Length: 114
Image 1 (cartoon, rainbow, N blue to C red):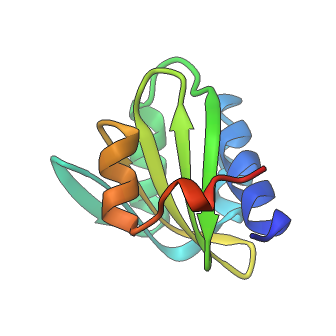
Image 2: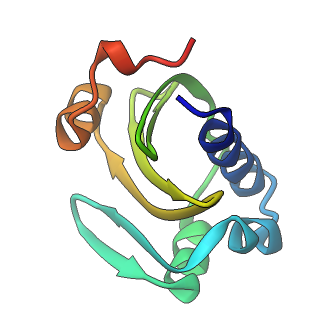
C-alpha cells in the first residue's frame, strides 16, 4: 500500500466535491478514462463533462489499494475503482456497489487500507 495513491484519490474526491475543476484536471492524466455501466469517455474534456454532471458531494468510506489500483467505497453504497500512476489518476470507473468494484479489480479484504 502506498500513502501516495490513497492521498491522490482523496485529493481527487475533494476537488470533485469542491467543483475545483483545475485541480481535478491536474490530478488526472491527459488520457484519463472515465466510465460506468452505461459507457466511457477519455481525456480531460470527457472528465470535465462527467464532473459537470455530478450532483451533490461524494463521501468516501473504506478504501482498498494494491499495485496502483484503489477502490473507494462511498457512503451512498457505490464504489469507484481508480488506477493511479505517478500521482495521476489514469482511470476511474463507477460501480454500483463495493462487491462489483472489488471483483472488477481483483482486490479483496486483504487490500483494505488501514
